[in-house]
Length: 341
Image (cartoon, rainbow, N blue to C red; front, side):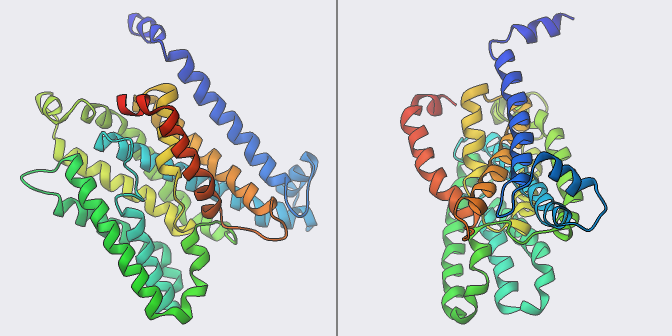
């Protein structure tokens, strides 16, 4: 009882609850709006009929076959990317850590690109290639940063270097196979156009398992945030925990990349903004980031496919256009807060 009272006395306790509930509520609203909005619009009754009616109707074909799996995949992709970013930022104790920055997403991207460009007959292996590319990149970063142990600074520096090398390799691949590049550009730009129930069934179980592991990892992140020396004094195996959390972050990023391509910004800025609002405790930050990431991707995808009709732009491009300037604005306005975290 005393612990409950102390928890309620925390100055951010009420704000944390409000932010998490608000993110969840907005996510539900954004998902419903995404089902309603498009070249063909539907009312709430039309959405209900499209999901629950078994009759072969226009609403059924558009809502159930096209929009509903797209919304669910957007939700999963956003949750995985934001959770991956939140975990990395906690492990590295650096608010600028992100799967895209340290090269994990690029590793997934180049592996998938090799399959699509050089071995198009094995296109079904793209999701597996993306995950294995991310995993191999993460292991390479960890090995190269090892020097009697690892440190967040060395991991980030090695990751940035690996990211640059992979970027050069990607450019070389595009030049050597310039006649085949057109087919992979939408995937490289990042987007969930054309996804359906097959892609949903392919990632849903992996996503559930990874997000449950992320919840399990919260207590380990909280200990690592105390610093390596303090964690060791508490009897914690720092290297094993850091390795587990980096691989978990890689798995989450690989799941997202496998179906959505290279979508940036989500894993970097969503946890960053929420940290300013509710503090750096991952007990609250991680679930809030997951909800916020899902909300951002679903909302951005709805705008990307409906605001520029009849043209549909990849959601990754829209997020880059919106996210870059907004992130610079946040740094300028809240640089003292960023430094303190």
